[in-house]
Length: 179
Length: 435
Image (cartoon, rainbow over all chains, first blue to last red; front, side, top):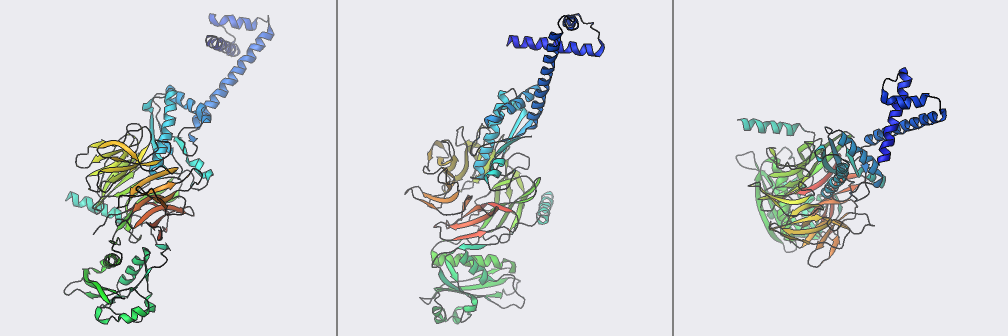
């Protein structure tokens, strides 16, 4: 953990220094002077290139991370297996990102709408929809969201996403939507 | 004055509403040997035609419940309208067991009409009952249903339920963003339907008060499921609950003093009872799984409910003073929405036998003999509601992707169907006796 954050710190400085050089070649900041000198000294050009490549790789990684987070936050419908109220394991990472986003934006409020397919009785399905919404709510809270940011409501089978009678329709209807 | 205006406004809203979903009754299955009955067209002394054919309404009533077969008027050898004109020989030749005749006359000195009817046992050549019913011309349908009640009770010994009504939910899909949800009320046979509530958010679980004057239901109009009570005659309504989470499944106790309901305010859905005089809540179940779908026993002392505390939904019973719930069903993958027939022994419910069979049927489980009779052969059956005389069960199902109302007799021999001319219909609730 310690080494990880150290590395992060170092590469941040490196990236800043490269940008500084590109912008105006001025290095007024003493703290940044050392790596910049190391870069421009020409003693070891291979090292400098490697450091540049590493910085670019990290920047790309960070971009990918941001893209992924944006995609995750755009993913607002989560599907469930028949008669199951726990969300799918494959949705865990996406939901964790939602949770952390709520933690970072304490004024953000969301509504979790739980749904069931039409099989079985309507009032029991209302309970099933709520349980699904709660399963996601609880995981968002584990990931830092506050209970006060989240309203849950169950529509049971009253608001199907698809009105067909096949399993392919039913699986689209067993869902929780973040609104 | 202010109250008057309020009522007038509501009436205006009701009459301006989109017309109710028209239900057209179809008899889908009758008994093998129905009782032959001749209902002779009633004579009418007036000159202008009447809006209802009383004899036709009575014939339809008796045939819909499957026990009777009405003789077509074209096959009749004579058309008596009173006892003096009846020749039993004419009806014995046609192998009729029973005969109903009648006449409609102006009520002297008023705009009302009098309907006189007489009912005969053909084999014994005996008049069983005769009456004169008075009403306005637009009450002829009600008068006909009342005659059906009497005839049915004379022959079967069971009180007729032809004057009862049903509540149901209709959903008219316009676009993915727009569906009209309505709570409608009609005669038991789907006729004379009218809209009581309309919303673009879901409406659920319409229930009758035991006196037939009020309904309770669930509306999502605030974007949260909340319980409302509405006066049928005036349209006046009030919101009953505003608890966090699910507020659902309102059901009046038979004595009219309490409303059972489901609230998830304490973490998961549990059954509560609200005293309608004091608004005091009593919690009947306390379990982290789902407890829902309450229904009362006839004595208003206990409540049936569905719980999935063992993993899958099963039916339980608990006293309203508390205690440990007793589990009633064991031999099914999914047993829910239990309600007793008036005998308190036969439990009507929704049943899926095994995980593999994937079909939800209406069934009756006798809690004394443990015998199960499955009554239906459609696969998405739900929301069973029992006629107040205990003779038939109305329920919702899907046929060709369409939500329809079906009815089946408690012995499974008779079936009729109430498909809607437009949209889906569901969640039928059969009224108590209204007369």
